[in-house]
Length: 80
Image (tube, rainbow, N blue to C red):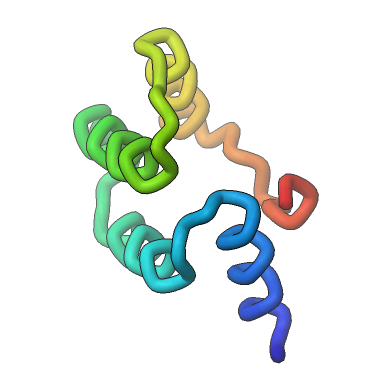
């Protein structure tokens, strides 16, 4: 099993989202303009639905601000 599979397994276990859904989200994300607020809102809503977690309006605004200002941490493994 390579590093990508191990990371996907960890994310899947922690989020209870299938690896297939994670990969689908990643593919979807690659085709979106992340400077477009509506694209970010749609993407976060998809994640919210898959994880059964509600995102409050103030959380959504903060997520949008972080993504648009390119403040997303590059080392995702420290979050898993």
